[in-house]
Length: 73
Image (cartoon, rainbow, N blue to C red; front, side, top):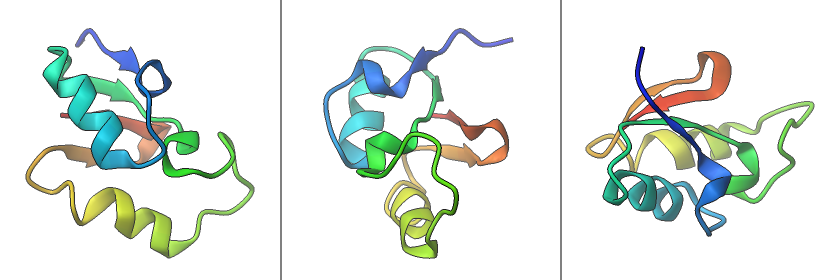
C-alpha cells in the first residue's frame, strides 16, 4: 500500500500543474479527480481529448492507472 493524497488538494485545472505539485510535495500516489482537468468530478462521459491531456504530456512524470482514477507518480 502507498500513502497518497487527493489531487484536489493542489491548485490547478490541468493535470500537469496538479500532479507536478503533488510530486514536488513528496507524494508518489494521487487519487485523481477530473475537476483537475476542468470538467465535473464524476462526469457521465470522458472525452478522449481529456484522456490524452492526462496521458500524453505526463508520460515522463506519472505512471497512470485509470482504474479507480488512481495515478502513481
